[in-house]
Image (tube, rainbow, N blue to C red; front, side, top):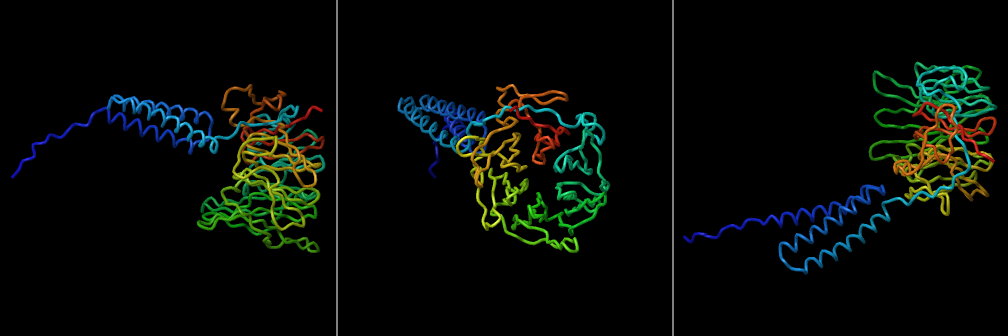
Length: 427
């Protein structure tokens, strides 16, 4: 038998260092694909280049050949080019916002998170979300209450608060319609349905949209100029998630609503439309936001297909110039040829001409990127303060809403701060 007298060579520590450096460089190069902030892109790019330099040095120390220094330099340059390509597709372009000359003040609320009626400056809200304005009144869906703002006073409307949450509210003339949520705490299930408040009396006008294990929620609703109730319905069944546009059938003679009527499907995934909002203009054009795609859709009264009114799919940059683009558009409001948009902490305004977006500017709010950069003089609005719109940081989330009061001031509800702001333009 021939014995194996060979001695196993120990692995040189320099090889281990070189391999670790190579792994770090690969991981660093892949991180920009997962992270879309400019700051983190700079950090990972620096780590990528440093790792490649270390790799070249280790290779030189290991093999004592200058060739490896040259190869490392070439790879470093190639890696820089690859990172630049990644950055172009991943990192959002800097915001290009054209701010109007506006001031932001607190319209109503004292910042306390309780239900308290009274004068605007003394009243308080819990979670003021959807708003609806009608003939000098502004109605606010405030968790399980409906509040009314009129002539400097906040009052609470009749509503079965102990049983339901008010998710969305809209006026149809003097009638107030509510998208309500009924929770069954013992079973963990809940359902959406429409209610109508008329002359202080509350009644259901639709059957429940069953939810729970498989969601079939309503994200928003709006009335067409002819008084038809349209709504967005989201079905989130595993493997079959979809979003549809529907409307309630209505018997005018009997003043009675019937079952929903399907209109059309949206060609977007449910996750992209879970915070979608809608609004009609006086000409019957329907606008719908698709936050997950960064676009606003338009459907004319005689049209069968949606068109992209503003934004570019999957381009979530803020841009008021050229091709108007949006980060995460949610709440919409049309008035006098203008479309107001709540867009990820900013309030933007689109001018409409012939059904097309012809101009865009920003009324108030700063972008999340600017807020996190620490380079701007960003402020929140305190009670009794007036802050320039370009300096305001709103806490407003996707459930916030826009409305116009009787004087034409733009209102923004903010569930996070329990306040309602007004945005004035200095003309």
